[in-house]
Image 1 (cartoon, one colour):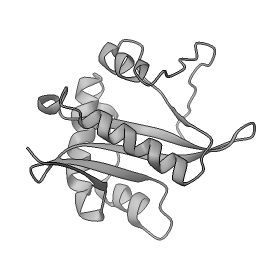
Image 2: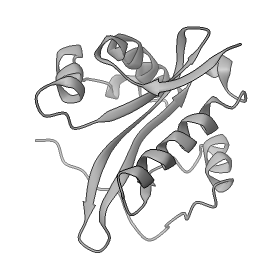
Image 3: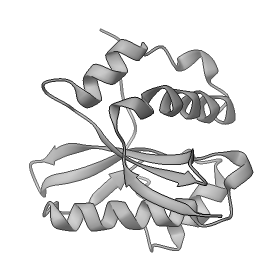
Image 4: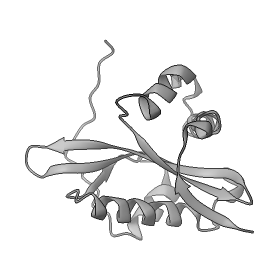
Length: 149
């Protein structure tokens, strides 16, 4: 099997949304995916993109991706925020997640970000164990907040 990690292109968006829906099913929240294809494409490939991604192709089929955006910390400066790291269920355990995460680390260093931050659901043991391999710091102090507008 040939695995390629590359930057996402506009033509990948339909497949990325499929994987996002797969992740939402896994996280028991399929109804939460409300983004339209048009908004998704414009946000990543329009005049002012706000997200970037790498895809993992196995034998020409996208089987995973990692999407990030730039977060600014008044204490640390620019940081990469990992929005999603997704590998299809059938391809988990074959190194695609590691290849994508390693590519994010390279990207963060090249762009001189001061770190990578992300969230993981407290019950998602496979993901937590994956991040522990990178010696990730898990912060129990902060509570996630959001409001619809």
